Every structure is written in structure tokens, then in C-alpha cells.
Length: 526
Image (cartoon, rainbow, N blue to C red; front, side, top):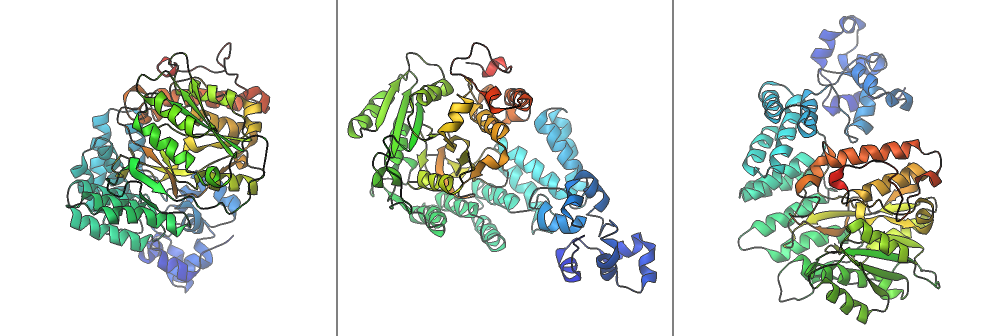
């Protein structure tokens, strides 16, 4: 069994020599220091190093630890902490799950979390602060977010969750409440502690946007820092005299670092479902025609704009692009049927060897499709891959409705899959929301977890426009319903369908099925 060295133990912050010697009576008579005894004997015997880490509970809760051949504390420090595993039972996490899952009254959950925040020790206290802060942030109560998280700084090794996310949320709350000097101080310390955390650059951009007067050059430079660190083209203003906005971004399109084979049909089909996207559609299509593959490898991309009976000028914008670029096709729907029906219409008309989707008001970096295609070529066992993105408003102020590991996260809409996936699994489910998540897990069920890849993890290759009135941000299909509500019910029903299949053919979904393969809540049906 792999153990920690004595030096690692003393430097990790989880070993309490006095507690260990008092807890285990044989230590005093061993002639060894508590640390030496733990390293030589106690760790292998499954003993705990201190009150903040319960070795036996950790082994029982995570049975794969023993299989990994690591002592409990060694596993936690080297793997488990980064994976979000807990060192001890944490009541605050249970109350947080009850809060979001609505298994207990909201006021009762919040009251219990406040008690834990005020009267418990680490790591319980820090997780209670995190749970309360995330809830207050969703409610847009930023002073309360700053107040509870202030109790967790400076950071202690026993703080939960481990990592930079609570710090990022604290900086965000300080920025939003006008405490810019303290926000800048905390951000500097965050970057020193986690120098590879790209979200910190976005927090700096937000800080520059909140400054008066706004430091627009520094705001854009912060975003460019991320891309340039990873050999991606920086952005500039399309109109140098215009404002720093999502609709005014432009990047150069470097020549791809690999050769795209010539073919009689497009390599990638990009489906763009549209309903009343307005100016956002111009931004989305401009970013697609500026893709490095489109600029340097003519014929490698086709764009299928599926208009879902828009009542604004979206069709006119699409047709202007189609008249300028022969590889853009506009496919009008006879009547409004929803985004996934529109996607399916594009899928039925696609010709590419690879297929992906682009939301009608988002912006993509010009090397996004290039990076994804290169990864698929290098990993022939991958059936599909995703890139990462970040949500922002039109003024390039970044954030997300609920903090997880940060603001940059996997872009489900960026799923790029081989045509073989379409031929074996068919179409997206025709519902109002969450069918992209179902399709992702359908691919996983059919081909295995190793068939799904991720490209440029932690680097935003797209900006998702945050629209308050969208289905994911408001109403009965809000993203919070993934914890309790229609999204959770839908995904659980889909998972049962996936788990019941014995071969990919049993997960095929036609464009117009005679009946649903699994039930869906009425609120999510078209």
C-alpha cells in the first residue's frame, strides 16, 4: 500500500500530532514520534491523522480507494480532494442537497446551515459558508455572499470545497458590491495560489468592467491572456471605434496546424437552430464563417441555418450570409416546433463526416472547430467530443448561475460527433429542453465513457450569451430543476432507457417516432 512520506505528512496540514497520540494509546510507548508512527504503522492500519480526516469513513464511502492501493490520506491528498471527495461526513453538504433538492423546507435548510456556519469547526464551517454563498448568489444577494465567504479567508487546508472556486465566488461578490480594492487584493492572492486557473483572468476582466472609468483595454487583454497562453489567436474589436461587446469581437484565423483531406462532401456540418435571434445571429454566423477551417480549407464546412418560424429579421440575416457564402443553407420550418426539432431538420439535411451544433446568438473562437477536429483525428476511438465555454452578457461580463469549479465549463452544445453516431443513434429527442444532455449520455451508454473526449479543457473556445428569459435561465425549465423538477425527472427517465439497452441499435431514435421510448414530463414536451 502506497503511503505518505513523513515530510509529506507534516506539510499537508491534516496531521494533528497531539490528537493522534491521545487517540491511539500505543503511540507513546512505541518510541516513535507521532508523525513517524503514523507513516510507519498508523496509515497502513487505517488510522485517522486528525479530527478533520476520518480514514475508516473515507474507505467505507469510497470503496475504490482500497483498489487503488493507496492509504486513505494519501489517496485524498493526491486524488480525492481534487475530485471533490470529502474527508469526513459533512452535514452542511447534506443540508445543501436538501435545499436544492427540495426534500426539506427552504427556511429549515438555511437555518441549519447558518447554525453550522456559526458553531462548527472546519471543514464543516467552510462548507456551510460555501453552501449559503451559492444559494445567495443564485438569489442575487451579493452582500450576503460576500459576508459568509469572508469567514473562510484566509484559506485553511481544511476548507471545503478544495480549490479556487470559493475564492472566485468571493472575488465576484466583492466586485458586484463595489468593494473593488478588496476584490483586487483577493484576486491577486487567488492567482498566486492557483496560477493556472484561467477563470481568474475572467474575474479580472469583470473587475476592469466595474472600474470607473471602465478599463476596456485591460478587460480585453485579460481575456486574450487565456488564449495566448494556449497558442490561440487573440481578439480585437471588429469596429475599433465601437464598444467592447460580444457583438463587436473579431479574431484572426490562423492557418490550421494540420491538413484537412480533400473530400467531395463537407468535413463538418454545423447546425444553427434559430428563433428570433436578431443581431445575435449575425454574431454567431460571423464567428462561424471566420473559423480557420472555413477560411483556409474551402469546402470543409457547411452551415445549416434552420429557422424555426422566426417573426423578426433572423431569416433576412441568414439569407444575407447565404448569398455571400455558398456553403450556408437556410432551411425554414413551416411552423414553430422548438430548438430540437430544428436541430433534427438540420441533421436530416447534413452531409458532413462530423456534425455539431452552434447556438444562434453565441460567439465561437475561430480555432474552436479546428481544435475539435484535430482531437477527433488524433483519437480515432472517440465517437464525439466537447470543448469548453463561458457565459457572459453582451458587455463581456462573465459568470454563471451557480458556481461549481468555476465559470468555464463543458459546452454541451459544442458536441461534435462522427456521422456513425447519427446513423446508429438517430436524432435528438423532440423536447423543449435538455435533449442535448440526453444525447450526450445516449452516446456514452452506446459506446462507453472512453468514446467521449474533451478538448482544450478549461479554456473557453466559445462565449455563450446569457439571456435572462431563455428556457435554461427562467421558468419551469430553469437549470435549477436538474436538482428537483422537470430536468431531473427527464434525465432520470432517459437514464433508465439508456441502462436498459443491450446494444446501440436499441437506442436509435427516429426523427418522428411513433411513440416515445421513455416518458417525459408534460412541461418539457413541445
